[in-house]
Length: 327
Ligand SMILES: Cc1cc2nc3c(=O)[nH]c(=O)nc-3n(C[C@H](O)[C@H](O)[C@H](O)COP(=O)(O)OP(=O)(O)OC[C@H]3O[C@@H](n4cnc5c(N)ncnc54)[C@H](O)[C@@H]3O)c2cc1C
Image 1 (spheres, helix red, strand yellow):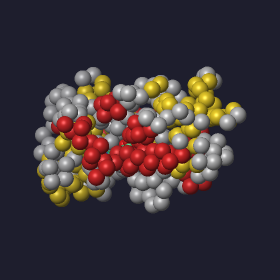
Image 2 (cartoon, helix red, strand yellow):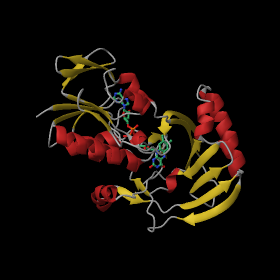
Image 3 (cartoon, protein in one colour):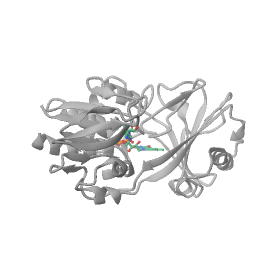
Image 4 (cartoon, protein in one colour):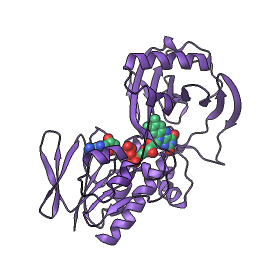
């Protein structure tokens, strides 16, 4: 069997790895301590925050079918949030999510699905692939310390587009196409409170401010009961302020949130921030995966389609279908 290295254990990489494990000798490398990539949850001081993907929807039959066993195990669960749209600080629309359009989250945390998907895979966590170099007919991977990780016939990069460009060798056929994919930044502000705030909703899409999203994270099924708010900046504000220091970002987003919900959120007991350099991308047209058979290199990820969990899954599936023909 051919030896394949997959870099990145997000939804795209894990989907592809599971699809190919019967056809090849698959090894997954992931730089962080956990699986799931941008489907992630941070736990601090008894507070829990899904600071990446908030929820997801299944539109395609393939994704619905993939989710079914996890729904049966209560790993993928419906979040029937009391949803509002806020224009500034005015509620302009209300809707309680129902099974008509299920909005799913993972329980007990967003990375639990990644863990389940990685169960039967050969995985190496906390391994940052730093170089991909040709040695004979194979690609040799090295980590940040210069340690050789192994030699592979195929390398699949399941990481954000700009990181693909930093890592992929020059001979990769789709370098130009991937370089043109522009992903946007986002800040996640995480606030934990001793006392619940008197909000009449669980999740808010915010318009006409520099904040795009506020939610009561603890309102999601299976979460810690400690009251927590998760706030996302708009992509535009994050892009314009990507080099601002963390304290200044926190201060600004706290002020903005206080104005929008008309509560002083600076009283939070726990305040934390995460900067996503490559958070999401607008809808893309064209290839759903970029498989270069001449050089035996491929790139997949949500950025091929749209910044959504389902898109990452579909890109992984598309890459796997192409590779099955070639292995
Ligand atoms: C703030 C935010 C909010 C979002 N909200 C939603 C939402 O509400 N609904 C929705 O559907 N989607 C949402 N998304 C998008 C969703 O999270 C992504 O579409 C999806 O998780 C992308 O999966 P992926 O596998 O393509 O990439 P990723 O999840 O980014 O996986 C890539 C993995 O590669 C690893 N990696 C990178 N470089 C290396 C390297 N050199 N060596 C080893 N490992 C490496 C990373 O650590 C990561 O684990 C949101 C994303 C963000 C950031």
